[in-house]
Length: 312
Image (tube, rainbow, N blue to C red; front, side):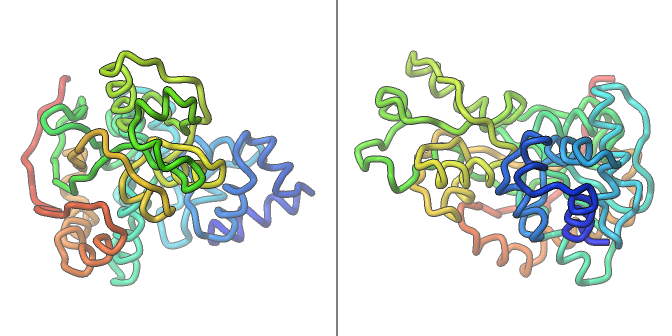
């Protein structure tokens, strides 16, 4: 059962319009439309809110028919467990949490090649690592300044994914003179922000603090892509990645250069999906597809960075 048919079928069975479901789940109607159309994968938080509004398990709505049917339930259990260590995932579908849209490309390539299934869950760096620490996912993607990335608290195997810029995406309707964060804040241009567990949000706070300026309250988006889309729709600014800004037609003002890494729970280092994913990440086909999005430095993508022992 696809996520499109499952979500739409459940919504219509309950007699809800897309707008009514969006209001009940506290998400945008645009997100409901995009998920039902199969062009967007909701963040874990948004997926759980949709499931609660429809009074059914999230895995019933979003688990892919070709994936381990328990993947969503296990990932949810891991995330909601905070940092309580307990195994929640199985040896079936490889479950990876993170905020890199390139994971969806990797998942499609693995499926097309008949390799082990990959379920990519959209989550901030902080939430992804919390899920990994809790045993709710096999791997977590995190990004941050080189040498300062938040690390897993469990023994983990690390691969390099990419380098990218995080910064402000500025909608075309915002004046051309708004070309710095200071100008945005001083001219009271609204900024779509992220959860405090997001590395991009932390970068935005550091940049504002360095200017001695306060960040105003604003709309909080669930992902880099959602933040860029919201800025375009609202004709304002958003904290996002260069790739997401370019794909949405926004001007981009870089604030920080970030390294992107993926950490695998070493208890699962024999998982068949790990080798398959590593092969995809280092393949020319994957890197060419991701490069077309723009905003990615893929030097060393898929290379092994070593292992960490964690804090436990």
